[in-house]
Length: 219
Image (cartoon, rainbow, N blue to C red; front, side):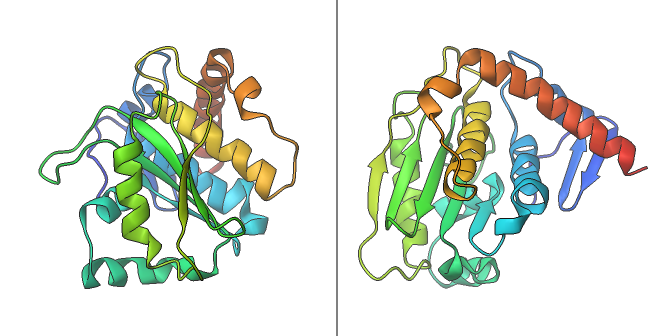
């Protein structure tokens, strides 16, 4: 699927991610992350940070998740087949609250994680479970393609809560990274006490630094 159009000079081309200045600008504190930045973060997790676990984990970009939420039937099956979801232990999806295919945007991101060992969808929402309806739609749409041996459960997890209206995308990214460290790297992780507003602000700058580092090494 085509991601949301962005403007400005190209900053980085990283596998399937193309970031422009307008995308990177959304990482400035006080800005709402667009889907290009979240897709880049997921691609970096897949291609670099958690590459050793690529057989066990799938990171599904926001545009694909939105397609899953708004479509069903044979078309969706053809679209999802190349993702090999039946072999993945963990699947991460960032869910947008936009319900219309006619417009892009939305106002909130949350994280949906499928855990095959626990046969459960875990929903991590940094805004008081406000995106539960959209997350459940995604879970219901994708469940049949997981080929689980029994009905998959859905659980709203206790999650770190944002203190503003713009950090939801960063919370979704931070939750994803720490959950991967917990389930893939077997690190001890405490989401609630780790992902604070200060942690999220620091992570924004770390991502800016990472993007510019990758851009400089790719020239």
